Structures are given as C-alpha cells and as structure tokens.
Image 1: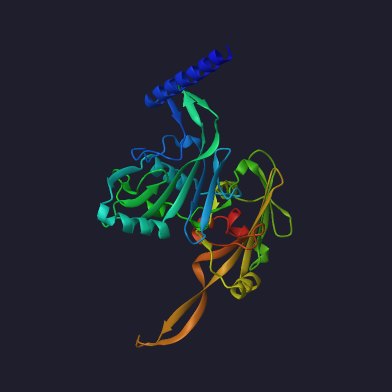
Image 2: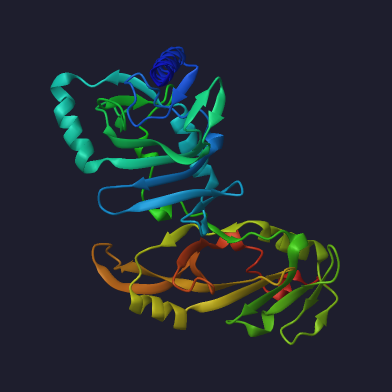
Amino acid sequence: MKRNRIIVIVAAALILICVLLILFRNNILNFSSDKMPESYAMALSDTSDVTQIFIADMHGNNVLLQKKNGVWMLHDTVPALQHNVKTILGTLTNLTIRQSIPQNALANINEVLAVGAVKVEIYEIAPKFTLFGIPFSVKERKTKTYYLGPATQDNMASYAYLEGMDEPYIVHIPGFRGFITPQFSQFEKDWRAHTLFHTKITRIESVVFTDFEHPEESFSVEKAGARFFNVYDSKHQQVYEYDTAKIIDMLSEFREKNYQTFVTELAPEKRDSIIHTCLFRVIKLTDINGKVSELCFYRLPEEFMVMKENGDLVDEIQHEYSRDKFYARLTEKPDEFYVVQYFHFYRQLQPLSYFLKKK
C-alpha cells in the first residue's frame, strides 16, 4: 500500500513537470531569470512600473533616481529634472539592437565595456512569474542591468551589453541621430532640478525684499485675501498707492524661478569673499504653511582686459561686476552656490519705487 502511494506521488510529480514545461514553452508560464536568451528584447516594455534608476561609472560617480508619489527625486531628497528622466525612460523604451558586433572586434569591445561602461540598473514593480496571465510574487525588483559604452564610428549608435545576454550588441534608437550613452549621466549636477522658488501666488503668505545697496527701496508684501496683498515700505509703513498689476505679476512668477547653473568649483576663500562683500539683495518668501525660503543674491565679479590704444598689449585688468549674471544661495542650503541670470529675476529685483503709481 505504501509502495503504491509512492508510485502515485512520483507519477503526479512527473505529470506536473511535463505540464509546466508545456506551459513554459507556449509562454503561458514565464519565470524571471538571471539568464536570458540573446533574442530577449533590450527595451523596457512599460515605464510606468519603473521605480528606481541607478547610474554609475567605474570611477565612483553615481546617481540614484527614485519615484516618490509620481515625482522623480535625486538621492531621495532633491527634486530631479523630470524632463531628463522622461527622456531616458523613452530611450530605454525604444532601444533597439541594430546589429551584432563582428567577431574580430568582440574581444576589444568587451574590454572597452569592462573598463569604461556606464552601468544602468532598472528597478520595477514586477512579478517573479506569471501563470495563465496571473502575476505572482509582485514586488520591487531589479529587472535589467545595462552597460552602455562608447559610440560607434558613425556616431549613430552605441555599444551596449544587457546582463543575461551572451554578448554585447550595437544598439540605437530608430530615427534618432546620435548615440544614447550621454543621456545617462552619472553626475548629480546633470539631474538636479534648477528650482529656487516653486510657490503659487495663492500659497504665498508674505515676501520680504531687502535691498542692501539702497535700503530705502526695501519693501514687503503680505497676504490680505485670496488674491489681495498689502505693501509695506522699508519702515513697515503701509503703502496704498501702488500698481496692483505689477505686484500681482511679480508674485505670480514665484511659481517657477530657476537658476542657470550649479557652481561646483569655487575656492573657499573666494566664496567667503563673495558672501561678505558682494551681497546686494535678499528675498524671503513664507508660504501659507509657514515654510520659509530665503534667497541671497551676490554680485558676480568678472575680470576685463583693457587694451592699449594700439590694441596690441594689455594695459591693465579691470575688475567689475557682471551685468548679466549673479550668484545666489538659499539659506537652507548654505554650501550650495548658483549662477542666476538677471533677466530671469527681472521683476523680483525691482525697487519699491518701480511698483508705486506714477503721479
């Protein structure tokens, strides 16, 4: 009796294995695996399931992009450039193998990828396997790891290897002129959102404009209603005769104020000199939740060569402040310096007299 039971169990197991093999061959049952056939598609099938993108090079530079409540963040703390993230997701969606690498060049390309490739890891909400179209063991998992190499000789494709494949390939985006690797930057500065202010006018409680070069032109604006504000001068005396349209236009622009570039190379002594001698304006914005954003503006010193009358030799080097750009620093991020263009803050840099009604 016991022997018959064993025979039945073994037979049932063999039948189950045969059924699973048939289902797997017909793509009814799919298992995730580290080993993938060479014909496996390079492209992502659905970018909406992507939760993390990790990009790194062989020199220790890396960035981690994470999706939080539908917004992509850099290292979980700084808003990322949403457009750039969408661009690389679009690239991975349309990534196509253009051709195989010739056998006589394969060893060389493998060596190039080993020492100089950009590694890109993709994490998605994905099942471990599906049975009859039903996903099982769904969770966040690493689904693809790319190694992106240099451009081909025609600069229209890139060498790339996808973990699980037997060899690297030449990949491209059909219809795209250029190669894809530069899109996957491993440097933080290329992914940081350039946001300084991001507050709608309806969420502004007050804004204080402090002018250090002309203190009498300092002023403040305080919320008095849904879209009504009171204006006060440098002595906090209320101003009644002001141009409402100019005030509203200026406050409306706080919904999106960005810097041009992030300053990465600034000697400590030069930074200290700028902070102590070049401050000319401070804008302090408080929203209806009490969050304070304070931005300090500093003149940007530049050197100009003054030529002699014959135009051949430099007579002297003249030091002036840039008329196009200035430095800026958020007080909540004191170690970060930005370069900002004057025209982008044109209305916010105007003195109180600009907003007064002309008599």
